[in-house]
Image (cartoon, rainbow, N blue to C red):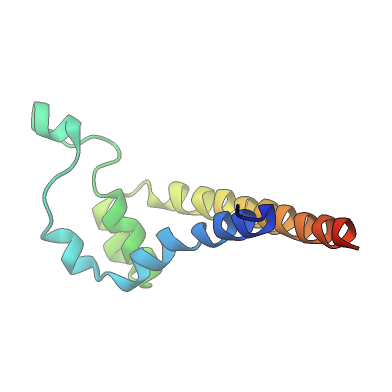
Length: 108
């Protein structure tokens, strides 16, 4: 059975996967992929979120004007995602640290 601190550490590490994936995959690769927006597939028009993945990728690669071209809402969404991400990382780190301390006290 896995120790709770190991599970908490895995959850903490999982917060780093999405930003790393967007940093590693070039935006050009995302441009050639299929359209995944259900709104666009069904009605053929762009929804407010269309292009956001490419825009976020551009921001992470420091191509800000290109990010704004893909979706201008990136100026609101990116800071909110960073805030959400930071809060999740802080919460995950505290949970992991508390569980490690608890396991140390229990084992003594």
